[in-house]
Length: 278
Image (cartoon, rainbow, N blue to C red):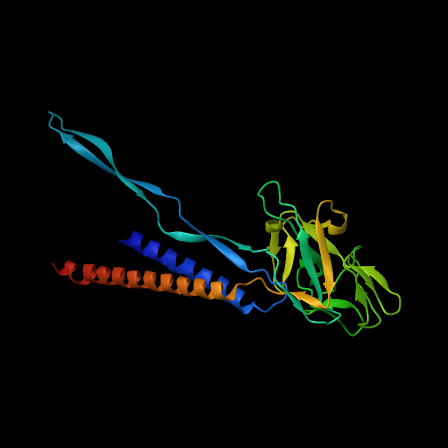
């Protein structure tokens, strides 16, 4: 009976976590460059149940022979194994704003180990000065003329330096070359992740590497093709209709587990209050 409680509880916890993930996807449906999370569910490893008994043998001294009988396999529920971002390219949205720059994948070779296509990311400065990566090209200029993300992180050039401009009258070529109104020249830093699933997702649309090492310079990588487009933004790749359907499915599954839990609770109540009287 208690095993049933554990199974139902694990199902409810899993669906609650899945709902939280889908809710976050829905909340970022309009966030430029946002990569929707996707989850995989897995059952706990199966356990083999056996019953241990002993059988009396009618001998002069009395002998008990132990033996076991196989009942069968059982597992104790399900859990969310992992959450991974979906790195598929989002649709482009033309804004005609000079500070909006979309990063577009053209040809990304698949990773030899898992067959996953690589991806490119802007390099930005994290909260404590470390290098972080983003697909959100919604840039702006701060009060000192530094190019930053919408959340205030400095955008870095190819050498890892911040980019300072006189005003927003600058141009960006498809190869990342940035030219300012007063002749400032820089090249937007772009990193290449051969296996993007090794990146760790953080807040504000930022990613970091698992080992802390920087990504390879995308401009120097052979076999990959990408371009930058000024006056456009990569939209979120969240499928709103699919996400709504998945949220309803997760809610119904949670509700079904809840009803089973209530049934177990009533059975335990009868066992404690009614059977005990007999």
